[in-house]
Image (cartoon, rainbow, N blue to C red; front, side):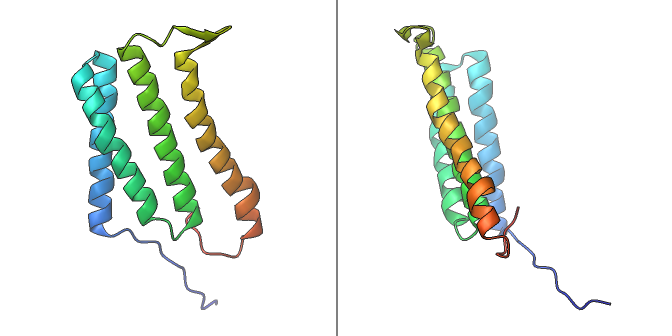
Length: 134
């Protein structure tokens, strides 16, 4: 029989409450986008993005949590920009060639993907013995 202990990652209740509230704001933002409720959709960008940044900051001691939470912040940024481009009817306006303003959302989406790629392909293999949540 082995006497190994299993490490546990616990989330303080105040953090979990903030994460749950974050989901509520995010859903209101996306519902507002779907229903074209511009004032509410625009207003929900701020608490959704701010809380995602706070969550990333609070989880910075674990690289896995930090990378995923920062990627979520970039996802929300891309999503919010896309929503705004539709609300203000510039999403189909051409910037250059076939590239429209909506396509600019690919920049923060790509940053998030690159960050996760860095974590899974570079950081995690080099730190396989370190305590992580993923």
